[in-house]
Image (cartoon, rainbow, N blue to C red; front, top):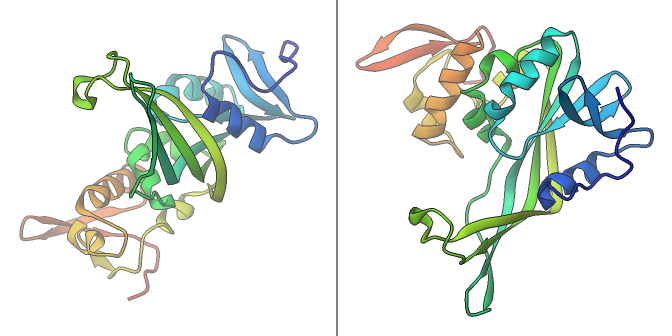
Length: 232
């Protein structure tokens, strides 16, 4: 390893990433450490801590290489339990409103569908941080046409509401609500806080992780079973 950069925030990263490093920092940590071809966000002894504010699959090649080298990795991913939207108009007007959407730990399944093998790797732990954040959108004409050409220019950490760490396979199963011994996506989608889209991602990811078995069909719906006991 080379000498770490002597400060946490980096000019090239967005505010959310820098804010999360500040939140996670402990005495003795090293930041932005060069390790072979990669730069590690935080090094704490022999533990490598990586923060990924967007899609987890983007880190897949890096994580696989480090895990294959026997490294222990703690992967941190924020989920917006509360989000404020700031809009900066071309006329200089700035508005701020609270988004009605609220993420929960179960929403991590939206990311796990692309990296199920990494999620159950014995040398990797995953931490879902339930955060309060602020998104800053600017009417600069450079964004997607779907967004009216508005660009997301920054994300800011306002606070951390909760944290959930997944260190072993059963930790992911524990995200499921009380279910029958054999259940379908419809059963899961009917639970409070769930919907059909999230249920499909959860069962897909858990099957790929070897935590659910497909045992048959009920009409055109797949029936799933887990060795874990579910409360009726």
